[in-house]
Image (cartoon, rainbow, N blue to C red; front, top):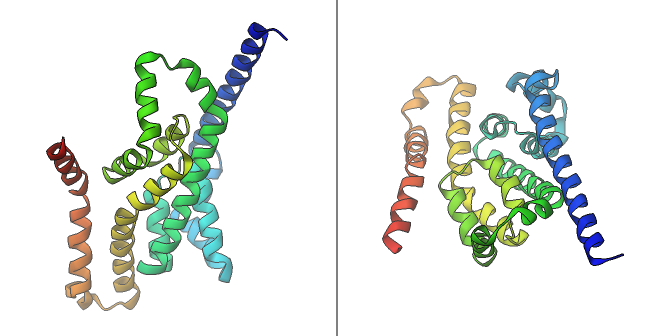
Length: 232
């Protein structure tokens, strides 16, 4: 096989993978929004299923979260459900685990199916950014997670870059930890008050604290940007 033929074959293979990647994303979005699958992803339907899973509910939930991330199911729905069912602390553990598994799976899909084609489109100007992401992968991923860059698009998108998987994994794990804990703590606290029926607990320190840190979470991206600009 000549060098030209080998390059042509390589480009064709990359193009086919890219088509599969695009087909996967389109199919996932259509399935979640326009097929009966949508009816299975309501809070009530998911709660009913997890309640019936018994002791296997945490594992079932993590698997649902993993698949949901890859199919563009809103993370707030899955996170809120986990906090409401499992409470503030166990909910945080299961939500974080599911988010990590889902983000890793989406990264792998993007890397396996889309990276070769993306690399073939990168010119000299974009290549320096791609190389910079590879060198500073952990810091880049951590920063984007802390400023709440759209979760699922970033999972797939990072797979198209040269960032090393473990830099991506570590940056994601640390970057989503604070936001995940704040949200699950807030939802879990309100769930506990609702379940107890003691509305007087709405005036408790735990409720006030959960509200304060929940509101504070919206300012995290701005604080991170200010700190970053000061260092530049």
